[in-house]
Length: 135
Length: 385
Image (cartoon, rainbow over all chains, first blue to last red; front, side, top):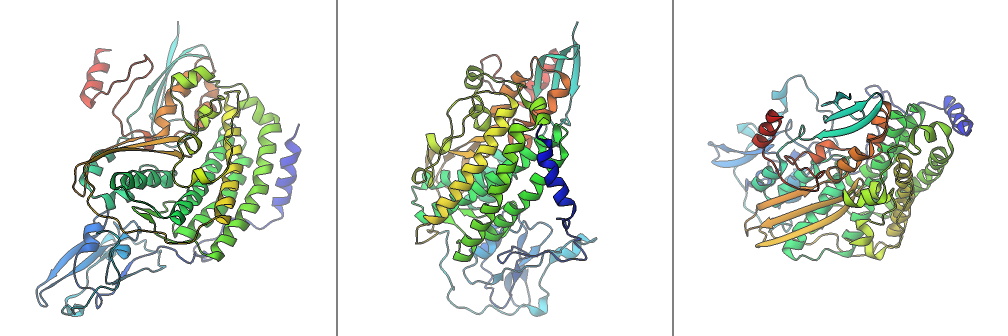
């Protein structure tokens, strides 16, 4: 019989702290490269639409702004799977990673992020910051 | 006179739907009928509608647990079709991540085996230690389970020196734990009574039914894709196959425990011999006309992808064959002659993953024939019965 072997382990664990955490009261440690909500910096965006093209779930859609006559991406975080393909793709580095993960909400509409008309400025033409990985 | 006992669509071991019809004589199972297809999600069709870049993330979601094996297989396939050379460093990082995922998958299923045989303590300890691996995966990829690290042409994130140290530290802690589990599973009488000489698959059965992964290695057949058809950096890493001759449920569990040690060895070797250089090369979006296959050893066994491309940025046809599909029939065969209470324990020793398997309509390999039925055919067939 070898059950006593595990019993010593069981007895030892009795005097240890619980492994589980009391989540809402105790914040979890987040890894350095954690993939949270991708955040758009509209001033860097040129409205090329590559992010919307590569998004696997269709969480990004391009919206036309008639006042400035340009396109800008709008994010639906309820569809986002946090794969960061948009960050990978964007040659102008307009989408930035963040560590924000507490996105649960009773109202799904609050997760749809459309940049308001007054924040959208006309496109500043400039060369891309990085070479695209997919050509 | 025998009795028919339908079990499922909710199956007794894991919360996934699958239907088994057991023909029993008293307590003893005489015949098993497996009905698959409750999780059919149409992934293969969807893959032909999305671009190659988007399909990386879709292939990842065919199976959440073996997501790394699925992406490795998929990107390997597309790279083969593109004739793209992946940097050495990327290949080693892929190997490291594959083995980490293997450890976490094996710990999960060994824990569930413990739960199914009524040994819940081991289940809790296994899952506690699984957290160490999950943290390591989160550390190097940014996500706990769905890693999204592989991409066409390499990997998306590099492993730094500090991360290397953290992984080595975690592996050394885990290795001590694995030793304890091996002791429990080889010596404990509770485990032996439930698993030893239960659900035996003979060597010839395993070969003729086409079992893969730990199921076939538990029956004494030397077949491991990592050694037989090496992919990525596996041909440059020395390791041994874990083989058990018995073919019972315990042998399958012990194969998995043995593989935990091999995986730990592979990770340590790969970290020590990680070559310097790029981790990624640019890839074209359009894939020229080609017809390629690729094989990967997923935690559950051999994973197979077949791509037919037509020169556009979307696949013309992509076929996936997952390990559970190969293993379900040998396991159904192994249940004949056992008693009803043994069903969950035998089933879980195969590591079933039905959401993985159910992209197929129907194939019957029991009569030695393989044919594919459409949805309507199945209905017609069972109406006639």
